Amino acid sequence: MGYRWSVWLGSASALLSLTTERLPQRSLRQLSRLLLFVFLCWGLLLPLSQVASAQEADRRFRQNLCIEYLTSLELPSQSFDGTTVGGLSALTYDPKTGQFYALSDDHGSGQARIYELDLPITQADGATEFGPAEVKGLVRPKDSEGQPYGGSFDPEGLALTPQGSFFVSTEGEPSQGLPPGLFEFDRVSGDLLRELPIPEKFVPKFAQGDEEQTIGGEIQPIEAEPVQIQGVQSNQGFESLSLSATGMAPGEPVRLFAATEGPLVQDKTATSINAAPRDRLLHYYLGEGRPLLVAEHLYPLEPLPGSAFHGLSEILALDGEGHFLGLERALTPLGFDAKLFQFTLAGATDISGTESLRGTLVDIEPIQKQLLLHLNELGIGLDNLEGMSWGPKLPDGSRSLLLISDDNFKSFQKTQILLFKVDAT
Image 1 (spheres, one colour):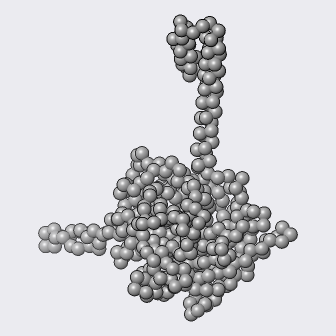
Image 2 (cartoon, helix red, strand yellow):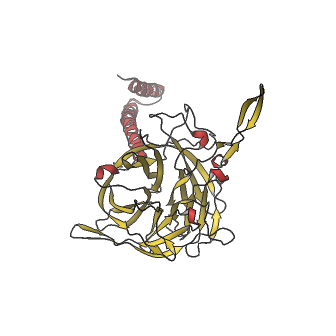
């Protein structure tokens, strides 16, 4: 007999002994049967509850997703309203109008912009028709003085709120001391509505480097270039951005999630083919009053030996319960590599108070993730995939998922849009 069973039955026996002298024999027999039934049920139900708890933990960790590649299209090189359409690093969808919006990260031209796109998806006789794509509108985000953003403004992430405004994430520019940012803009005018506060640890900071030289037999200090000691790395700021609604009504609060493309300077670990770079993901609650930073989590990148660059290029909320898709992209000697992961925030440690993620981490549980799809196995040539968005429901009730590439305004690259079907089983 197991320890747990002996404890339960011993407790039952002790309880019965207390009533032996106070109850008639018939009542005692009835009570003993009742207590035995209760304790037996307790012993049987507890293991079942433990199984249920394990199943609930697994449900919190992941959804059973089935993803199927359908087709793709290429957005032709073109101009619109005096701008070159390209550098599309993010994509979002408006289910009310059926229109998509794509963010151009052409910060070098001084023309930050959001394009309205028509990307029709139809299905007939089991075949999926995608496109043709058409640019239909343009929104120019403006600063607090009403001037169009440009220059050092490096937009990378885009999301549409239930209220109809845009959130845009930027990478910042450490060489100019500019931190990454999270901005909200009016959908029609492009006017700046607000800027979210970000933790100080993301802000680039530098220290004056000290070196020595020997002149005439004497050691004298010389000034060296400043060394960055904190904050986002160049081109590795807030690349990813996603929203999840807390309710269906237009006025309901939303949760905003933003992640760095690569580790902060103070989080960089020793170079190793086995070392997983450590990104940070921020979780905001946006309701009435001031924005609330709920938590900060460690997102471990998947190491890809031999790649020239590897980063988290986009995240996308699967639901309002902390489940996400993560798009990781790398540049290898053979071209671009892209993997789609599923991950959850359940169980991940809040690292808001952790200033550095270097070295061996103690008592920190990172975000749990699993590989959903290695896109290079699709048998199609991949470009620089950076954006990801849900699209309209397909006729069979499944969700459509779109990925878009940033052509970097290079003639040898292209704006590639991939279409997938996603089912939850």
